[in-house]
Amino acid sequence: MAIIPSALSPLSRTVDSVIPDRYLVNLQENLVRAGMYVKASELLSLVVLAGIVLCLVVFLLFSLIGINPILGGLLGLLLPGAVIFIWIFFMMERRVDSIEQGTPDFLRQISSLLRSGVGIETALEDISKHGKGPLIDELKRAVIEIKIGSTFEDALLSMGERLKSKNLDRTFRMILEGRRVGGSLSDVIETVAEDLRAILALKRERKANVMMSVMFLLVAAIVAAPFALGMIMSYSSFIGSLGKVNPLAESALIAASGYIIIHSAIAGLLIGIVLYGSARKGVKYALLLAPAAFGIFYVIQSLGPKLLGF
Image 1 (cartoon, rainbow, N blue to C red):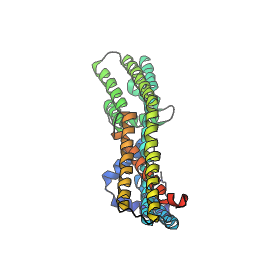
Image 2: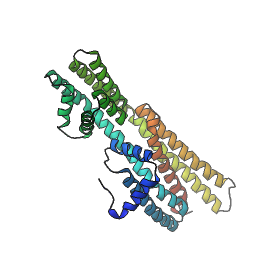
Image 3: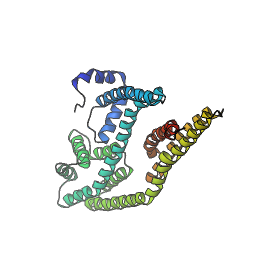
Image 4: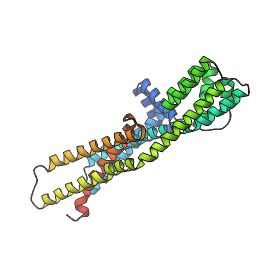
């Protein structure tokens, strides 16, 4: 599905020719995982165009309000890409969560069809023809893979690999193992469905219990620390305006900026550990918190003296 006008097609073709195919394929897979059915090169073209336009706008805006325009131009250039890719990360997590929540009911439907004498491949195809949503989309893809030559086992395992969900991968492997050893597959699937339902309930309960900790980390990362250090730097500027120049002022600004970025990145990783038990899943929060915190700090320390009449 095209998302850019034909006038921008040369830019899209340039992106296709410049970026290696393996990166475009990887980005395309992530877009599909996020439920965004757009061409990777077209999305990158829009990101580049938006970055250039925003770079010029923020450059002029920072020049007018007396903030370093080069920094503004750099922020404007990088901001669209950062926002888009962070949005993709969140959409992927949201889509996987939606699929996980719907999987227990899907498994119970499979179990009911198996008890009525329908084969598992036929049951999978029947369910994929009804309803809509991310789980149904994945089922349709699995059915197509089976029709073009993949085995049921490969199609099911590839669905778990695409979604990168440990819960779903574990669930599918248990079903395949139950099918391999024989016995009542419908009973195995129903047991797996109840097991997955219990796991998801525990996951929701854990998230609810740690939300206060997450809120504390967010406030500390993007409000408390940037505001406090920004006001300290504003006071330092005020002292300098009185003729009492601090020789360490420039070094203090660099140190404070580095601290803000590192503190926010660590807070993002901690949020990932608290919510998901994995620092890797906190990378997306770190990528979001670090520039936001630095932006707040920079605005406070730049505009603080003017707002307070120094």
